[in-house]
Length: 268
Image 1: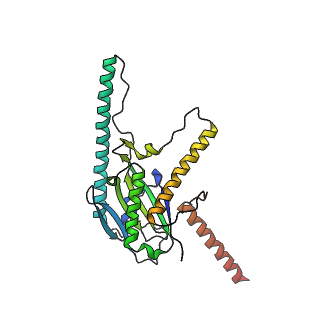
Image 2: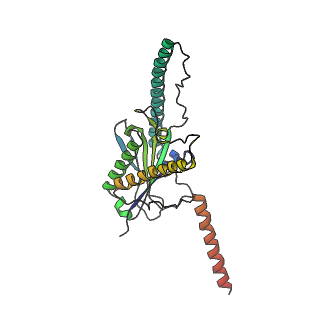
């Protein structure tokens, strides 16, 4: 029996999926799983506390669900920015009052959140026995895992925008989109996790800091594997995911090479 593996990947800003990809259309260059009969699944907020679940095909008929997710995303984004502004204005009033008392010049304090786009995404790719993925336990573990990752980032369940599970591609995977603002810490989760090197930091310290950041990423891999009740990828592996365009190019080149060899043998 093949082992089941769960791998965590944080998407770059340029890689954040559109709602069209998540719910509506399977693009032509996706590697389609023709053998599956499983429906894709999306979990999203009915309200701030509870999730709704919809089973779907990416056939363009999910506009209503997309609109619900989009409306929640807009409302949460506004709520986050209003919360930040209220916090900074209260902080500003306090500092200005202290400066007036001491007769000092008050510092410049920004009251507007500078992050333009609070929507972020991470992906959990799942490999192994596909039968185990068609079970309530798998869906339960998926939600538990997503909540654990969100909590580790310093966020709350209400920050989750959508959880889309795709079975119609070769590798089953989970897209998790979330709002990156921490209502408790009054900053973004990305800023909480970021370690900034100082200008006078030595090369050895920078290397140590890089190793620490790598270890943090490894902690997410462990967390995901543990909560999904699966194994994680190889620790310390330097393997990198190829871009889809690179993979398809190699695939075409191999097919062309095989055809040329076949034609050559036919002529002989």
